[in-house]
Length: 259
Image (cartoon, rainbow, N blue to C red; front, side, top):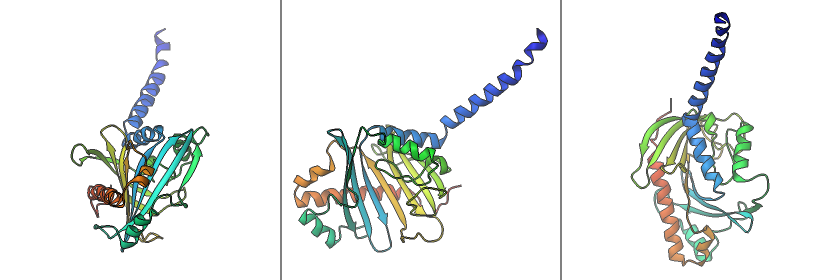
């Protein structure tokens, strides 16, 4: 009987090692960011303000996603800004004409009851090992390929985030804006996504982009409610949103390469 107990030790050691690996995985920065994405996609709705920063002009896409009548609707608005300043004259004209909403190249509606819900789409891309993810209410990067580390807290209440920093090299997956990017992810106090910022790491991006900043919010009103707003109110909304994205961009240090 005494001899037989020795056979248990390898099993016990293996179980302890397995448990330690599971705990380490679940408490890792990548898992924390993954949970934030999962919580966000489970809502089947969010609003993303995506800033594409270039040398001459800042392009802002405000993309609202919500479910109505059993359908998932994605509604974008596209505008341009003088870097760090205000709307360009072209975008002001668009707003006056009511032409900034519903860009046909981005607008779509899909059944919320199809297999490919936001959460299912995100999980599918992770399983396929995609480096750059696509779809509404998700960041561009795969958290499990981004070598994330926690750097502490950023921002002031009520917009305070846990900040994660990483480095992504493209392995597979489409629409790679950079072949290599420095990455920052801010997770809100409620565990949902706050923002993601990517900065060009090496070489030049094919599109000439310098940085991409995405701020996630969860408004009670859908983006299409702006159709009924005055021109002045719409200009004010987009300008405030643009500067909110610049605030997130300012939380990510320029020129610091993650380790």
